[in-house]
Image 1: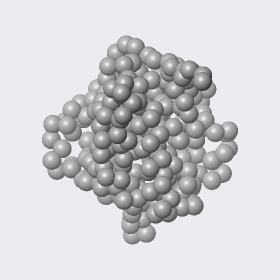
Image 2 (image 1 turned 90 degrees about the horizontal axis):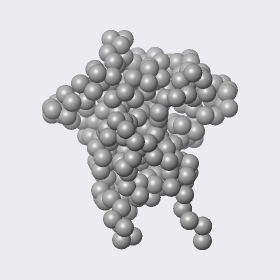
Image 3 (image 1 turned 90 degrees about the vertical axis):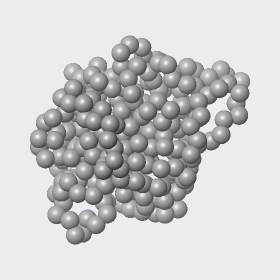
Image 4 (image 1 turned 180 degrees about the vertical axis):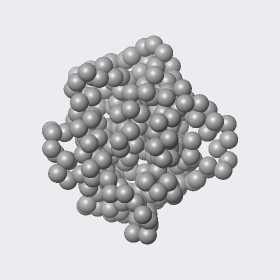
Amino acid sequence: MPQPVAAPTVTGVLARTRPCILDPRLALSEWGVLAAVRLSAECSVWMPRELRETLKSPKGAFRTQADKLAPRVYGAQSRALVRREEEIRSSLDQWGAVLQGPLGWLRLYYLGENAGESVLPAPLDHAVHERFESLAAGLDSMMRRVGYDLPRGEAISACFRDTAALCAALAPYGAFVISTLESDGRAAPALCNYLDAWGVNVVDVTARAGADSEVLRSVLARAGLGPVEWSGSRLAAMHVIPSALLLDSGDNELMAPSLERSTVYWHLV
C-alpha cells in the first residue's frame, strides 16, 4: 500500500495566526483580491477548494455565465439589489492576474484533493483532510436533498458548501469566514441563506458579539480593509461550530463531525 504524501507546510508568523476563510461572495466582488492581499499580513488566509478551482478555470469558463456565480439570496425580489454579473467578470479577471502574475507570491492556504496537493500552515493536526471531506460530503447530501438554487446555482452552491465545511474542519483553531452583505446592506450574508435553506442552524449574534467582534474589527483595521467599508460594503464574520470538535489523537477512533447538527453564528464587524 503506498504511503500517504505529507502536505507541504509553511512556518513563520502567518502559521501562528487564526485561520481566515475567504467567503466566495467577498472573493468574487470588486474587493476580493484586495481583501486577500491585505488580510494575508494579519491572518492565515484560506481559499475554499471549489472556489479555488473556479478561479483557476480556463479564462472564459464563467465569464459568459457570470450569473451562475451570483448567489440567490432570500427576498431578492423585494430588495433593490445591484446586478453583479459585471463585477463577477471583473473579479475573475483580477484573480487570473493574481494567481498567474506579479502577485503569484501571495500565500493562500488550501486543501487539495489529497494531502500532497494542499498547502497548509504548520502545525496542523493530521485529521483536517478527513474532517473536511466528511463535512463536505454530508453538506453536499443536504444541499442536493433540498435543491435550493439548483441547478442554476450549482457552482456558487458548491463554493459555499466547501467554505462552510472548511471553516468547520478548522474550527479547533478558531477559524472564521470573512464576507460581505449584499448591496443593500441588509439581512444575512448569502452563505447564511444557503446554509439555512439546507437545514443548518444559523444565528445572528451581531447584538451580542461583543469582544469577538471588536477583535476582528481590529484585525481588519490593521489589515487596511477600511476602503471596503468606506465604499458602503458591510463586512460580516461567520463562525461554524460543528457537532464534534476532535483533533487527530492517533487512535483512529475519531467521531465524524457533522454540519447537520451544527450551528453557524454570524455578526457584522
